[in-house]
Amino acid sequence: MEEDSNHWHKGGGYLVLLVVAIFLFFGWRIGLADKGVVETDGEETAVSSPISSQQNPDGATAFSSDQAPLYDFSTGDLPVFNDTGLAPQPNPHTYEGKLPHHEFETYTVERGDTPGTIAEQFGIAVETLLGGNARLSQETTLLQPGDVLIILPIDAVLHEVQPGDTLESVSEQYDIPVEDIIAYTDNNLEFPYRLYPETNIMVPGAKREVVIWQPPTVSSSGGSGLGGGIAPKIVGTGTFQFPVNNRNFTQFYWYGHPAIDIALGEGNAVFASDTGTVTYAGWNTWGYGNLIVINHGNGYDTIYAHLSGINVVPGQIVYKGNVIGYTGNTGNSSGPHIHFEIRIGGNPDDPCWYLGCG
Image (cartoon, rainbow, N blue to C red; front, side, top):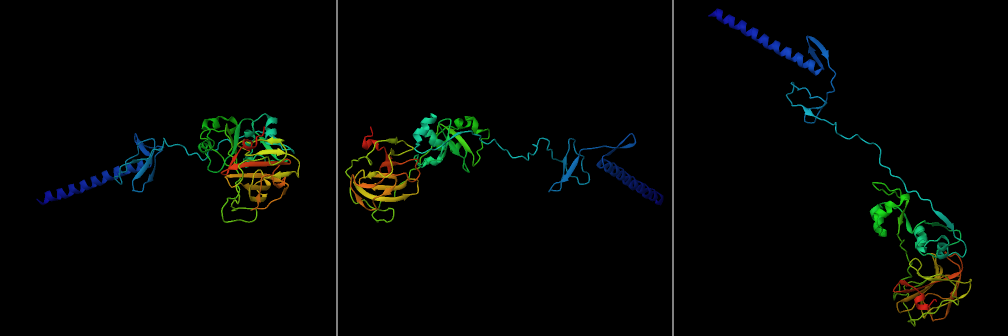
């Protein structure tokens, strides 16, 4: 019995040694594989492999390779693939489109010029002259000798791009289709159609909006200085006479010029076109020079601009035909003339409807 027990202990020892040998053998093979070495016909061969790995936050090993990764026996984790073969290459360059490129003819204003004569000289509409020169949107008589004007080749508006402008917002502003703006070659608009502040684009077929100066609001609170807040003290007749004894018209009423201009030398008498109350008398910074506004107490106002002298004060009652001032060339003016407006409810109306300019 004792002899059988000795045999059993000896056999168990051999079994333990065998198990240890097996583990050592496989551990050696796994180590070689991890180092990129395989055994072929009894020789160890180094193998170049594109396998790379990195540790993920959850502890698993992530592989990036064109080949299947080896199994990690040491942790028992399944291999994690991270194939970026289809990912786009990074582009460090920001898109930059072409800037608009325009070449325009220009004209330097001379004494006696009007928007109408300039437009006729170049064979364009007066609206086109306004479209190329934003400054004239205040009032097209605001010309002075030496001013340089842009002459557009087509009926359009030369729009100065502001921060935040888009092709769609410009299209909506002028009520012109986006396609028409893109089609104008010199705008250099290509997809994705970006606009760049401080550049100018042409908007074919558009008309520039005109900003009209408004006289002081009339109220019952009284006023001082040039006028403002002065309530009308008298009601006019409702009929109007010419403000000067001359019919030399240099410009008529149109949307960009809400008045008539009559040329004559400086110092000629200017008459009140109808009875009313003077609500403004003095220098106007808008470009009208010396200016008089009369409120006629019936919804009408008359405006007399570019005067050389003023013969009334705010709050004064004047009667139809009274001398209120003298013709001149003050403010933004290219020659001596009277700029005369009739407004109803604050909106300009054509004076020729009331005066008969024919």
